[in-house]
Image (cartoon, rainbow, N blue to C red):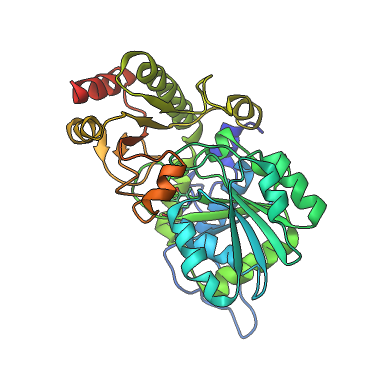
Length: 377
Ligand SMILES: *Cc1c(COP(=O)(O)O)cnc(C)c1O
């Protein structure tokens, strides 16, 4: 089936009792059992919930995977993935991952004897050189936030296969509409469904997709045993949202391409970071492993006062963290999402104080362009 057909139908059969075309919201913590040892396959809400199961099947289909396992947040999903390793194991991780992922790995998981090597995975040789005897997983995020650097997924998978390692890709920025890491050979995909999957900025959620039976069995066990499940209502909202994922992503992409071009040609910006620009150093890789360029743009205004002015004056772009919603957001990575990264490290990756990040929404692009233009004027 095509992407949109799956998005609207996968995992969702009309309700057998009433024929309701929309997946019912099962708000129940427990299920009546017919007699001792006999039930309908449902015992307790943490373990079984049909609304959640529908969401898991739906997103698994969109990521071209066999199994989905939903969690209460992106970070809960990532923490569950850490249960795949044990004390003494080592991971190779993209040095520019989501800040919360860095915090989880470096300040919590290290207490359990798990080791991490942080490398620039946009150069595959760095991954190869970081692999040790006790390495179990290579964990990448592509494109990265906020510099929009790419990692070659297929190249990473090849290194993992050769060394018998699991490959994990955080696919939050592209969504399954523009990038399918499992189709490129990756073992596991993880999403913060808070972002594009839900796309309406009204919930926090996470999901893992895999076709690896052993990984699935383990994560399903962890989902129940550790218990970081999403609420049925959040699952229901996300299911409603994925129905429009294709149309939303097309519009995010179209608007972002227009805005990136505008910023390059008609603005005082000194540098625009967007994988869709021919000037992006990895534009060819972007075209190869993604089917679109997404809605995230970073723009360096070269001057902190000008950046501040833009951040303060935009009316449609709201100054806020997060991304991937239908509404446009603007943020200042150096003081917001990446404040915890030392200034020297930020400098190395060209994350300057005059860098502004845009999450381009699906409003009328003319209005968005006028909003940015008015802001610096
Ligand atoms: C937001 C985000 C996360 C964390 O997800 P939460 O839902 O906020 O817990 C992980 N990875 C990426 C790329 C993100 O943008």
